[in-house]
Length: 114
Length: 110
Image (tube, rainbow over all chains, first blue to last red; front, side, top):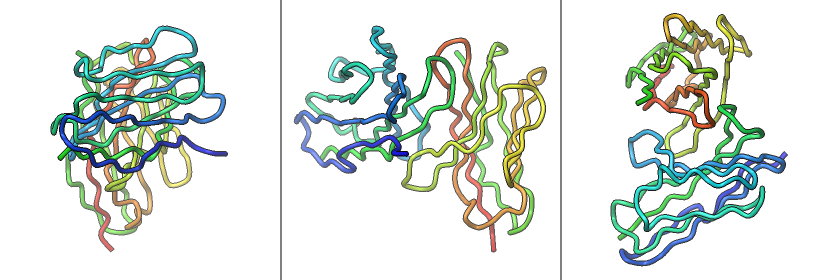
């Protein structure tokens, strides 16, 4: 079946602009995660959605970052007033059930802030 | 602070050999353990998961878990150049989050 999809695959933006990244999870997966991976670094947890529960936003690095998800479908991650340090690959993952279980990653969005 | 430690490598093995990748974790309450493969410029791909002590085999891959020692490993038999990648260990605790290690770079030489 179809995996996690993300768009755009690449985004180049000027410092100070807003960007919106999209994630479409595997159908039927109730849990959705966003991560950030800077070049040569590990995965940094950003935010978690589970069904209609309140999201866990504890990993968002600043109030310039926000994310939404409608039900168990598409999620968008928005970065306002982008800074050069926001340059990274943003990865979305989904999981079939709530809990510390298998996560399946999308291809990522490579964001470059110039 | 939950920690997952991996040797950054690079780990270099000849083609056909067994590659052994190791991971230790700090949270004794950890319940689930995962190995992801990440090719350069690509996203992580789940290759193995294990929940119980002991070994779990899938093709050329074997995951080994020892909760008493807080240690999980991945063995790759008959290593191929296509196995060259960074291998991420991830550990799940009592909530929904996975803690990822920084990964071990594996190079399989033809």
